Amino acid sequence: KEKKVDKSLLLNVLSDFEKFSDNPEDLKAIAYNYQLINEELKAIEVYKRILKIRPQKRQSFRDLANAFYEQKNYIDFLKTYAYYLQKGFTIDATDISAIMSSEIMSVYNMDLETANARQKIKISDPLKNEESDVRVVIEWNVSEAEFVLELVNPELERYTLKNTSSHNPALIEDQKEKGYQSKELIIRDLNPRNYLLNLTYLGNKQYKPTYFKITTYYNWGRENQSKKIEVFELSEKNKKVRLGKINRRNL
Image 1: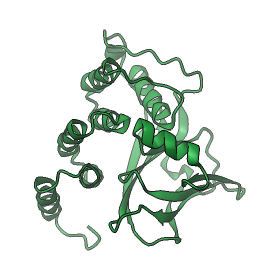
Image 2 (image 1 turned 60 degrees about the vertical axis):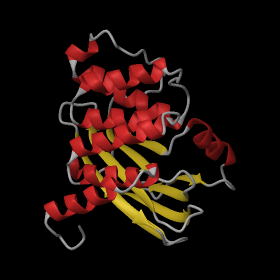
Image 3 (image 1 turned 90 degrees about the vertical axis):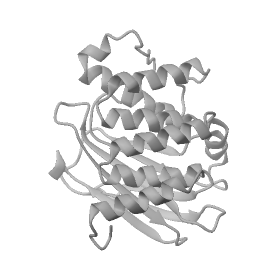
Image 4 (image 1 turned 180 degrees about the vertical axis):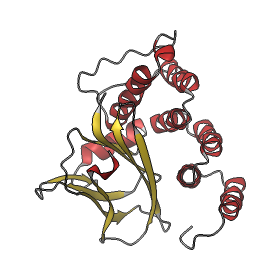
């Protein structure tokens, strides 16, 4: 990809990895890269495999539902969450539930036919994100990954998430107990100048890299909503990496 090789070669490489792996972390990295090159149908099949391997993880349901969402397949999107609720899971006050709530409400607001469907899911969270200038979803494939995420606004004010067992043990415990690796960031009113998204990777207790998928939605919840997906492979520890700039150019 970095050498601008032909897309068919990328697909062959990803397909070969997919055939010979049953590791859900590796499969998730493959799905991320399918989504990066706009092969959503292939990503859906990989996420279905991951759900079969990890039916106890909330992230497995959300990833499959999101892949349906990106295809505007809202019926299967809602069926996935109906199945999620039937299995006894809930949409509660967690990072993964905030992401689920945002996407479920987006479907209801964007598709009137689906909004009246029988499988409508009630969202009671008063803080749900129905509309904003920017919505960023950060996902990572390895549950043991530790890092410091930083969003810097034009006034140099920082929002910092320390996703580590030493700084935030309750969050790490919640992620492991409920099975999710994702975070949502909201910028309701975007300043004309640049916001910076940085990440300092701290390792994952393994000898393989961690893959991060960053999906930036502009004009979230509006008719002109758009998105940009980026995938990062990180292995070098204690080095701050710029994941991207966010500005009004894409609004």
